[in-house]
Length: 261
Image (tube, rainbow, N blue to C red):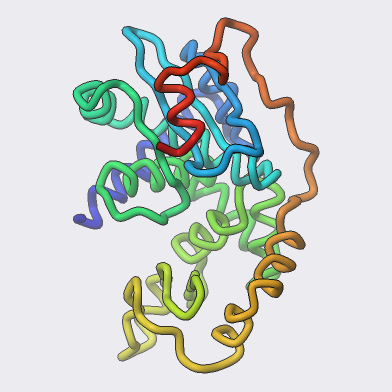
């Protein structure tokens, strides 16, 4: 989709953070949801599938987020993503037209316009440009700076890395791979300006080398995921609101969401 639409979605997220009075890290998406009377409900960790969902019912909404990774940053991004479906123009109408419930797999893993816009909204909400640039300028360039950004902003490392590429002053490329393929890649403007460089496309094969060899062993991937799963912040309680929220035992659209169907 057009890059300017995604930029607008990012700017909308930044505007929402500002409107709710957040002028320093961390931005707290749960507080924003509460201010809009949106119920927050955790999806049980043992239930695999989607990263989150939003269910519209009349003038109210419920956001459901995944806890399967035990990662506060991932959970915050998932909630922020679902808030994108609430705040972005046209999203509520499209979701209601489709039945009122929408399941997401956030973190830039899907190519549909509604999902990409929500991802960029979440990025702008949790990582406003001016705060991100300020933090990056005061920390070491590279992975150390990205980890500091993720820790300070209470967001996922993936989101911090992508935002660092978007906001940082130095040439940077963020490449996410699965198995022997490119999942997606982000490059900074200064990186693009270095000269003629190969554009990495989703699904392109990884070059034979250390990363491809590392990915070939599932045990390596599991160890790496485990080592990065905890950003040095305590996890909040799963329930953020004591109002009535759906029970997972009900054979309803909520249970179907939990089961990833």
